Image (cartoon, rainbow, N blue to C red; front, side, top):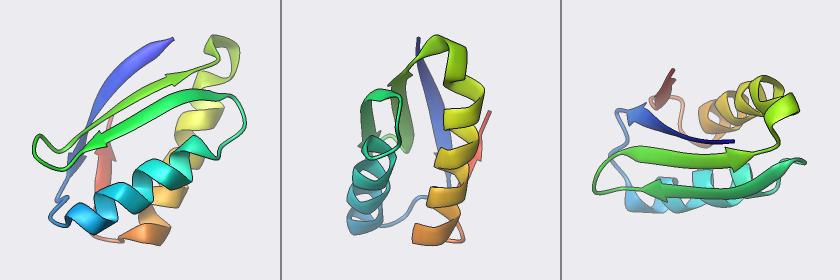
Length: 72
């Protein structure tokens, strides 16, 4: 399953890269791409575990930059 999400308050290209790399490490993630210019995350992951993976991604985003929130 592939979905696109808005990353609210993403204001740092370095943070975008860190978020992307961290999400790619989550088990079950097929691909993850964060665009600093558009403020979007494109996430492709196993469909049966998508919600669990999305929850883990939200926690990682908060660790990297506590100002950034994932809009579902």
